[in-house]
Length: 489
Figure 1 (cartoon, one colour):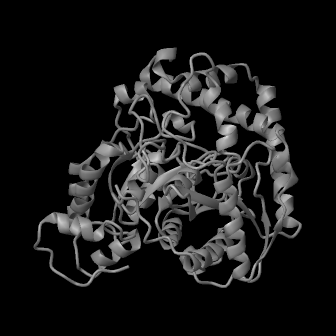
Figure 2: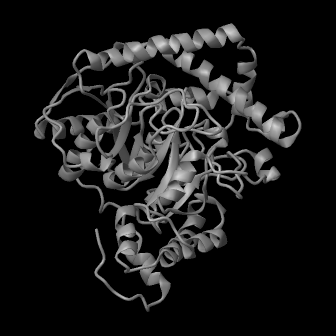
Figure 3: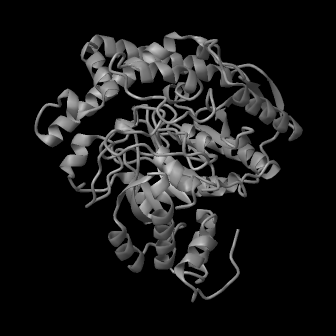
């Protein structure tokens, strides 16, 4: 998508409207060809944020004046030079700005980050102009974005519904056209869940594809990338930020060529397994099953072989218990770090009930228990990856077990503190396994309910094979384009 050359002498709202649905690649082209300046693009994005965000509550920390200084300065000549974007309010430090991780105690502290994380530094090196932070649930723990510290973010397709989580603020901002692309992270589905709920592209890269330095380690369940409206943006973003950092211990094999070059490349005839039911036998919404089956038919029309099949390990409910042990221990670790920052131990009122309950659970996990959970995860990872080794190229599933949840679905419950996590068993049955296995997975916006809510489908490739995902995803994007579908907000 491109604009015809023109001189913007009209009010800025004209540029804000003209560029609202252009992807990041198209906006970078406008800067590169001299049609607009980085400052003009930034002002257009600021206008859209100020006009649209009151209904959504997606952008919760704003540093517009700083962004104006950056846009007016000597930006790096990267692939996204001058493109406005936003950072998720979770672990992604930006030097000189605040980070709350969705936590009231950190919000009140308002400490300034001393340095960028490596990924943020690479984003800035690619030419992005970061204008602020997007909402995240406290410590990214839930599949919705309703932190008590900042309030609920709402879905642009229907504001009675959640945009998903934990990258829900980023997804809502991109889906509403505030910015063309935004930072996101994924420890159990947190890129793919909001991509599905908001009608976006959400790629979870392989573990070790992108460094988490300098503060976190790649052996963590989490990875980082973005949510976007186009595959070319996602591929170019991955090219710009991929690679190890100093001291990394998990490093994915380098790609044979830039990921952007995979779009349009022939993937060949692939063998694809279809999982169109809940792996634990719990309910699965008909629209989600329909989305996966329609995608299977579309893939077959493109020449691929699709058959029922999935790794047997996904149906073992023991995985869920192992995942909770690791997830809760990560929560306990986060609490320790926050306590160090604020200079005192946390008390129940400092954090949300569900997270307090998880940290309390973690306190009962000793070193041997944690080592056994890690060992069990290794066993699970090998069992899941064996399925690809035995002859399948991709797994096709719905991204979520239900359409976008209503606001309040995952509310804290004083009578049952772990209720939000239990509720997630039916909502997110397909995403956490591939954080544990370390494999790349992508959610694509290929279906909408009759009520107009987006339903994503997930494709999962073998470890390190983002190239295969992007080739097939590009075929689907060409066969069933989604670029012209926008929410009415």
